[in-house]
Image (tube, rainbow, N blue to C red):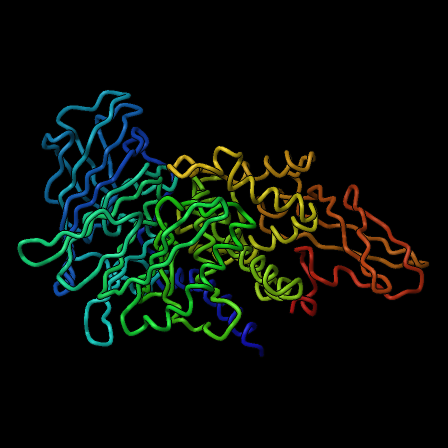
Length: 551
């Protein structure tokens, strides 16, 4: 087994852990789902978090201030916060408000309801012992770890559960704040590495330090992260594809600094290749940041969590960094407005790994990477039309499919469209026009769904491609290819669930040459005579194959 194959297998098993975890812990905090009226009535504008983190006691305490705009009657308001934490007080526009905190939700009755159209501020004073991550990052919360010399090494991770595991928020993927400010106080000697740009490191009277990080772009709640350790910072600069000089900040444990230095150029190359494929790094006005973490990794905006142990020093690429970096485009720049479309984050991100390997090592490397992720579960629709929360879409019956199957949908779409049109679709889904491509003030960030991608692909190709996505993402079962050879004539036809239309061409190799067999109405023919032929020998099409052909 090659090192690459071993790594790919490990990655595939890793991506299966959300599904296995669902069996071990069926009840957990979740993110998203249908909005209740008390949260639908307002639009979040900004979060300001003032928090003191005590590593010895493993506690947090502080104040979260949300600035929001009332878009409906706000006589009742709601925020989400895990019940492991205690709320001491709530104010709305500085006036004391009645509240109840139970079952992970804070129900608030303002003394005076904000007027529709007006901005208002909700401040929540809270604290306690936050949920400890049992198996981060799949089981989220705080990780209270130690360095080799027994110093605190702390990280947050909460993609599946939502940021309300450790701070009050409206835990919905479709309502991102326009920005955020984090004022995090920690004992002397520790560094806080977080999102955006560092505004101040201020020493307090008790010797502790407060780090103020400012996020200037819209950000998903789960992407706001704390990384706390006796870090050393490795600095570099990177010239983006549009000429922007961008700072690089790599926060690593002191004992790993020399090894980490060897990875910076490799990591920068990941950025370079992704920029060539998709367009500029989205947050180049802030930073490209990486923090070494005691858990495997996560796509925290502008501060990627990296815990892969610098294992790829003598290999082709660090797959963990490559995948998490891809989310700066797929997840952080382009964000699904409902978790039902999470394949746009994970499937697109997984596909970028294959595209990177193709750019660096050729077509064979690309195909090998795709084959390493060919296991699909096909139990539920990849992109259902109804609302889904994180438990249902990520930890549910087909959690792995948002990674592997999602990447194979794009791989098959490449066969349907050809390279020029596929890459045009990817670039324009990231940046619809020149204005978005040039923007660095946060206006480049967008909320999207699967229908947006279908519409874009149809527009670029001049063909209604709804049929393609109806089969691959709107229902779970794969198409089957039936074939018959009679008197030298190869007849092909697609079988689809419910006889859904599926005119996808079929690659057939005859005499070492691949022919694209058109399949109007799901049927096609090719005269092969007595020659040997192979159906889709390069695995360019996602289909239900006989078991002997799946390996």
